[in-house]
Length: 278
Length: 324
Ligand SMILES: Nc1ncnc2c1ncn2[C@@H]1O[C@H](COP(=O)(O)OP(=O)(O)OP(=O)(O)O)[C@@H](O)[C@H]1O
Ligand SMILES: [Mg+2]
Image (cartoon, rainbow over all chains, first blue to last red; front, side, top):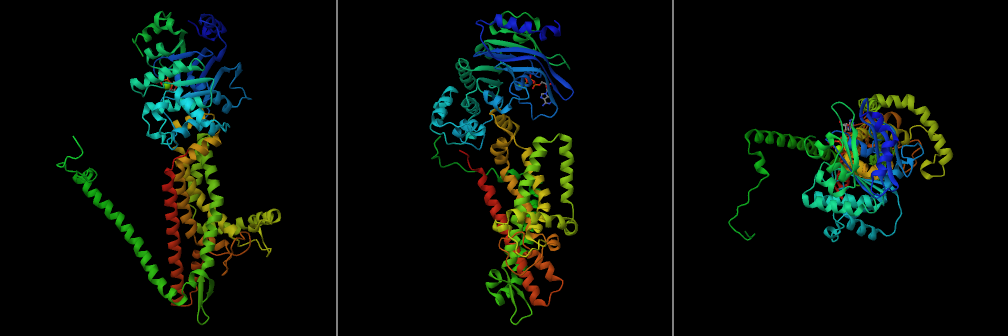
């Protein structure tokens, strides 16, 4: 397989045909490469994310999944020496264009991180509403927002009687669901999740997976996971990343999740999804 | 098992932490050192307090509430109110200048500057802290005074309608503003290095959280980094303030000491400062009684600094509050 193949727009269109029902794209990464200083860590990534679907990004550690997902809402900007080539389209516009406000982008494209990161000095309620406060959005129906987002995140019943307690007192799994609620409160169109369940117990993980499936009816979800069963359970599409030693990471194969897991075209994908390396 | 079980013996886990022999020795040395510093502190306080007694006996409460230094009259009258107040006024001016400047500088170093420039700046700021205050005083006298005179004239010209910028004498030298400015220069390296350290420790996952919620750098600072570091920053400011309150020689060079209370006219010539009073009178002391008066003044400066530190502790301990 040559790199030229990754870079062609052809791949993209094939993807579109492959997906069950062609929909509008929520986001579209085109020929994306990323450098940290002199080191190139991602090369020529093309992935299209159809609206209101869930896409899983899988691959061995260090192949650039986190790096990729962070480029989707411009989170590399405080990292000295980070550079990027290619483009990331959101609603048909490149989010890296000079006239685009990154603050606006991040409001529309929410993110949940591997480590639960509620603001520890804020209350549970304060955390849910923090996105509105931090971005200066004016809304009057705060109580309704708190209830509906915590319900979507599957946390409402556990915390409804202690909304004024410190968020730091919650368990790890509860904190993770809290930050999902926090991300939802600003009503994003896309939700990026970087290994959201890696620090959680099976019960919390199942809860969050339920949440993801429910959410993906309305929101486009892109999730990085090391858990193959999880990818199968929650995602419609899957992209497999791989980096050879001292080479930048790239996408080896992508398509419908059922295809990738049952009938991959590339031997390396087959090996990876069957746990034979990585 | 119920909690009513009576034959449970409680074991103190904390004191068991020093059951290792080496730890026990270490523990005693540390405890001893801590007590020594307390004893030294108490010794100073007692010495100054004893000296202050005769001064108080002769002057009464007026020593604190009035402003005068007429030692050769009979009976002599002395009161340090204007000096105490002046010290506080200078400290406030220094804070107003130094705190925003230090925070901006640290934010730039931590979040904005390329690593190389941040490093150079860090070294420069640390170097600033090493300048002896007498040099700073000389510098202020010869180099800072002329431009500062002009700034103050401009302030008076455009903002003179605000009472604090009144100036009736037309003399813009020896003002509390210049003295406060010099103190600010002395505070900036201290406050900056603490603030930089504290901001640099903002957990990256909280910065990520703020960014991913559509925060600008400013809102991230306001709601995440600054609240997170508030305790440390207040601590740094208090360290700097301690220096400002007690600073003697640099202020001596640029402040015109007057035995009067300059309540608020920060760009009017003349002000007070306990430390500067002490140093300016000490060399030409007229007798043991005046010396006692000066030591009494020192005692109250010491008390004042203690009070400031207590207020600081109060602020720091209140930082655990929840944000709604
Ligand atoms: N801030 C950074 N500066 C320099 N190099 C970085 C930085 N972040 C990531 N890298 C490098 O980029 C490569 C990809 O890292 P990335 O975190 O994207 O991997 P990943 O696929 O998410 O791995 P994991 O599954 O372990 O989370 C790694 O080799 C890593 O060392
Ligand atoms: Mg990662």
